[in-house]
Length: 402
Ligand code: LLP
Image 1 (tube, rainbow, N blue to C red):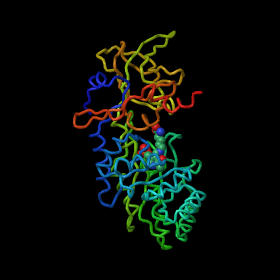
Image 2 (image 1 turned 30 degrees about the vertical axis):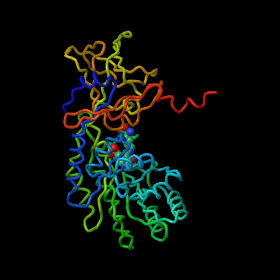
Image 3 (image 1 turned 90 degrees about the vertical axis):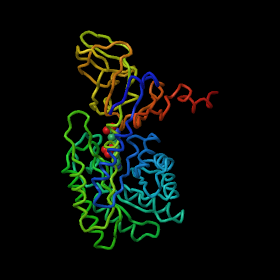
């Protein structure tokens, strides 16, 4: 990544997110190539970064979309991802969302409970349609990641156990309005161990084989997302070993492999750039206060997540400090007890690995406008989302003033 953060700060002000689109292409292609021995669909997890230009870039590369709301489905369609590459997942789909998904004729609805399957069946019947169904299996495997982003244990709210899944497939098979086409499992995010993925995919593949024996033949095996990235010094899963481990379980099955990476594709494509406002010392403690805050990038506050931070100045004299934003919460920090050089007003600070789950989790807390997003491709920069103004923030409220 060779991006002139200073030039972009002069042109677009701070704070901003910048995404390296060439990096995104490389990540997508790496994964697609790893699965080359089979028919595969890389359904990008839109929640990681749902900027239309980001999704469009992936659409151009041939990606599908894994969506968790009808809003995400509409984003994917808007930028030209064909409906037959779109998957709709999520534990709590609203009737209207199910209806729209059926009307839009997407590839499959990923069903996460028996009650939801009944609902989909009813709505499909009302519409006179056949709903293509995939069922999310919860394999009860510990993915060895942060508890907030672990999803594959029975104690988590996601998916159904194997026996329930089997009954649901039989229900689909017997219904005029349901067609079982896929199976899905996703055990967690930021995974750095291959073993739990292997175990869970094996459980899923065994179910596919059992279903085949009773003449229920599925066309798609969706192994979820979850591939971890380097924030600090993580040792990563090798993508070829990952693909190989998955493909091995599918031996003898005529099935398309689907995977739903989010973070892997965009996480390390993004950098958050903020600038120093002030430094101060409270007692013994040094604080560096920047113009970005927890509302812009909440991962450190929410998960105690580590993001590598660099002050873009030439000062070599380091000392411990907390890097904090202007929001009125003690939880508003990017890093605590981090060694940073002495700064001055307007020095830029880069917060790395900010392409996934950063802008998408931003809010207007403290009536702060969401920041600008910029894409860089082949050395050319482009504003892909304007900085929100005060007027943007209040636009939906004004009409109610009496
Ligand atoms: N598929 C399903 C069903 C998912 O729930 C997720 C992520 C993905 C795919 C994509 O996972 P990825 O490849 O990005 O790991 N906000 C958290 C991450 C939440 C992940 C939720 N599900 C964070 O900032 O770490």
